Length: 193
Ligand code: SF4
Ligand code: SF4
Image (cartoon, protein in one colour):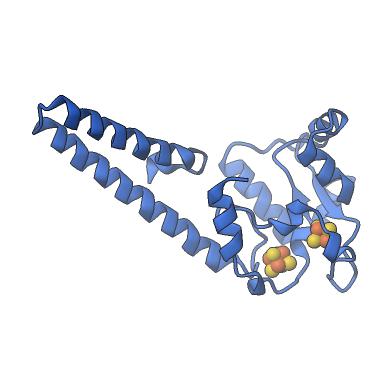
């Protein structure tokens, strides 16, 4: 795992979880069940770990019967991103969740559970204890990227005022680093912030 994720996970306030069990009871992935099975057959670690604990609901309606708010929220987010396909989207429940919302294998739970919510952009159920904290974490990252973009503008200006090859080289190197940072968050929309 990268340094960002390590830092993020080490500062995540676990006490915010109020153990409602919703993120164990109704879960979806960006891949279809068939794609996950194919990856599992190829020993893909993530797919194997996921399918070891999660069981697919027989239909979206069956998942909706368990938690309609969560299912509808996920579907509307998928639709917003143009990623909703009723033939590909599956919902799952964990076979280790107890009726009292506790995890029956808590000490041995897989990494994917230990890392959840794994980034500030993780989709959590409505009302999840992490909602507010995740929002603040996203804002912090956005602020950092905006500052980086301001620095890029200043560097651009600096370049117009310098002719020294060495200085121009150094400026290009800093620009490159800043672009790499922005690129890191591309999948979360960093170029639009
Ligand atoms: S949905 Fe949020 S508050 Fe509920 S168990 Fe999961 S992480 Fe904790
Ligand atoms: S293994 Fe435990 S923590 Fe992980 S999804 Fe299942 S019940 Fe939740």
